[in-house]
Image (cartoon, rainbow, N blue to C red; front, side):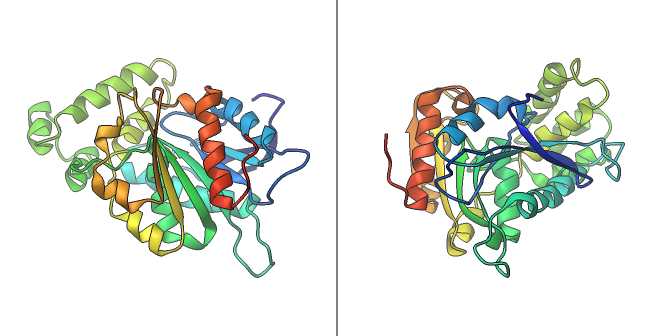
Length: 283
């Protein structure tokens, strides 16, 4: 991990937390960056610098699945889901801001890709911990999603042969291709834990569409930023229901995850944060 990060803690709830704080913050409320698939604090360092340079305190977790108390053998999607459900509230408790001692600590969030799925689910359970959420190229919002119960059954090993798996996921045969792709992309690099990356690919098919209006009803403003050249989540993926369920929907140039290294896209995210907080833009 780069020395430019401040490591503020390692927790048995399954993550290490890293922080970049400006000398003169424009707001005491930190911005939690929730990484997407296979990402961590290191891969978001450039954007953390951009946030800090604009006056925001940036915090980002690197999830750890090898800490004491965590499952050593990954066999169910629910293991991954359970880890995130308890880690995200712990992150907010560690570094969130509360104006008064008796009030819950809160954060604003920039959630990327699958990270939007995790954040939406946690925010629906603990809405008092969240103020604003910016979803960058979010997963989980397709009008037609893969059948979750059937996929859970598949991951529990109830269907062994490939032909039966194909029948099980009718209408979603591409999921086996996604498993193979995840294995090829991450298997060589993470030989000991490649199964969790395949599981995370499965976990990303959770549908969060119905949560969007619920988050709005609970006072959480949600903005969606999608990128026009994104092959995974292009603008056409998001229908009128999604667009009408959020505070702001913005299309920008770029590919998937470009906000992490493109200052122009990153600045759009920062300007959105300022607008959501009522902070005048100087850019």
